[in-house]
Length: 316
Image 1 (spheres, rainbow, N blue to C red):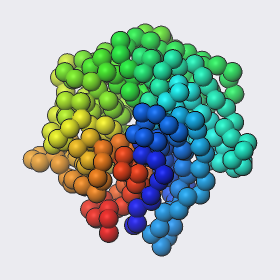
Image 2 (cartoon, rainbow, N blue to C red):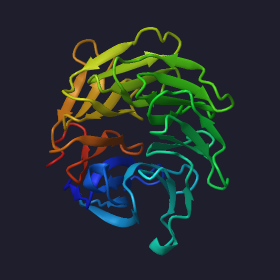
Image 3 (tube, helix red, strand yellow):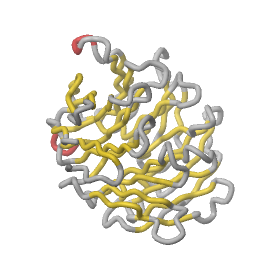
Image 4 (cartoon, helix red, strand yellow):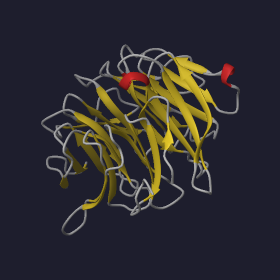
């Protein structure tokens, strides 16, 4: 499938939970340091092409995006100006964004929609906090502020409506319940900053982390003193990790080494299933389609978005 060429550097990519042909991509100008942002919605065509369906421009770069789980037209972006933007793809460009939440004190690095309750979402930022939001609430519902450095990722547990996970530059993972301002579990997971985390889609107690130390670690919250598995193979910091929606032990990762990797952490011998080197700059965004088994998407600082079937050459 041909790559889509964006105007800015790619930061995040996410398949729509409603349509197998829609893809959201968050981008930033000038590598996210200074300049504008653009939120894309892309359409995958049966012929193999990728085309822009719509896009929304912002004054500052965008670092992440997430689709609403209760409305196929709603999309949320994390902005470098500390705001959280809400878009409605059914409305014209001039009517967007429909909301802009402006509470974070620094860049917002991640957003994630609740998979169970479907009526709220999380953000996390370089102000060391994570926040809980609802679209129709005038301000954040709660703030979680126990990390001592940037919170790079916040992600919901796919089985529990109130439980989420954060990854921080303070080298810890924290498990939270939204009903409690204090973390219920702290895992000092890596020696260097933790940039990414995700929950298993098949086991509510299993999670994965990715770090500046170049490793990916799999954890069981019931025995958090030691990781279940440590996956080594990236040459630089691991920027994002995602558990497969189709296979319990399969993980996708992308890295500042410009590669995308697929892993099976329960494999008896070599856990590395595949390494894709189609990007020519830092690989920042990765996702796996919930609709089509083995369908992957990635984006990078090289301003490209690739969609391909696992086992195939993304450039083919």
